[in-house]
Length: 394
Ligand code: HEM
Image 1 (tube, helix red, strand yellow):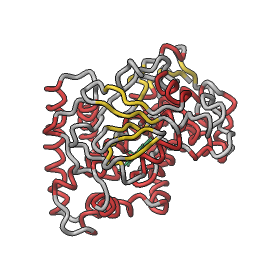
Image 2 (cartoon, rainbow, N blue to C red; image 1 turned 135 degrees about the vertical axis):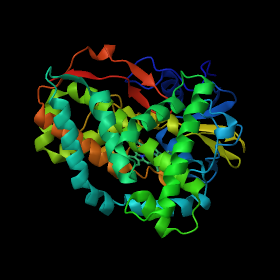
Image 3 (cartoon, helix red, strand yellow; image 1 turned 60 degrees about the vertical axis):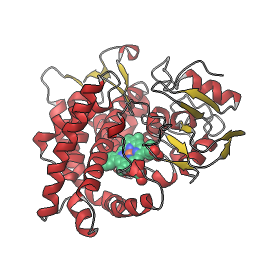
Image 4 (cartoon, rainbow, N blue to C red; image 1 turned 90 degrees about the horizontal axis):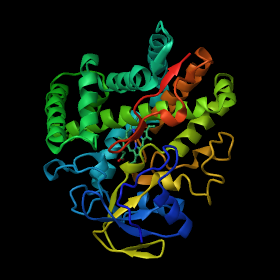
């Protein structure tokens, strides 16, 4: 039985927590204490995790007292009004109304504009006189915010404040009062923002969704816009920062990216698998009694399918701790979840990551970390694992 509480600490920033590995090696499904109260069953095998992410026996009900949130979100702010709190049939209907905005066709149509934004941000980054910078603050965050901000038609000058409050909402280190203040700020901001979309016609994502789906409420649109803003920048920014650290440690791969599009695609998939930055984003509650990994899980029990552990399951990914962009089926990972709630922004994130890594390797082949990898400060954020800073020179 585990002595650790969930979320488990990482001994090494690039490795999954020891507890995941112990459970995986023992082929065990165990119930552990959750830091903010209650218990959760931890799932670590690829098969069990995929089952739990997709099966209707698992609910997303965030208001359930046993929902194993990695953060102490105050009850008044726990809501099922966003896609990530809904179950079928409500979720199916709601996802249906958003899906059209994220089809591969639409993402392809957005790509030239995303490429312009990537170019502009890389130009600005590499233009620095001292040829040094922090990939997170100077490139990854401004770029990913600009992309999602433009899709949602959020005024660019508002983005830094929105990002600041989003960070505080998900920060484990803030006080509950600070968290409530950040959530309240975001709710107020998006109340006005969304209300304006109901009255003025315009060709942005939220306006199109409202126009195509008469009868949607302001509250629904507030939660959707917030989810798209959060999902749309933080995880992709984290992947840019951490992904680059891994790539700079494998210079042959890094230098080959601009001229080998297949390698670029598979390197991005392999980084998504290896880093699994949204490992803490997939809590569930059992909606009925169910047996997983030989354990009887009761209706109402908290369940935690770990995408990071599943993505290191040696039965599926041989030598799973190694970055190997040439391994078979690099896209078999569950870094974007699986099944019903599969990330809607996955193709958009892939486009951003391919463009950033490919262009950085082309334009700054001498790019290197300015501190040893072991000195990079990491943050186990609320839902997203990330480097606080990635200092580089070129
Ligand atoms: C590398 C970047 C990203 C990663 C690793 C990631 C990861 C995930 C994961 C694991 C889920 C499933 C959560 C669950 O099953 O509980 C998810 C859902 C979602 N993601 Fe992402 N995401 C990324 C980028 C994006 C972007 C760019 C957007 C939007 C612009 C986005 C929007 C969403 C939405 C709307 C959902 C909810 C889907 C649903 O419930 O039906 N994500 N994401």
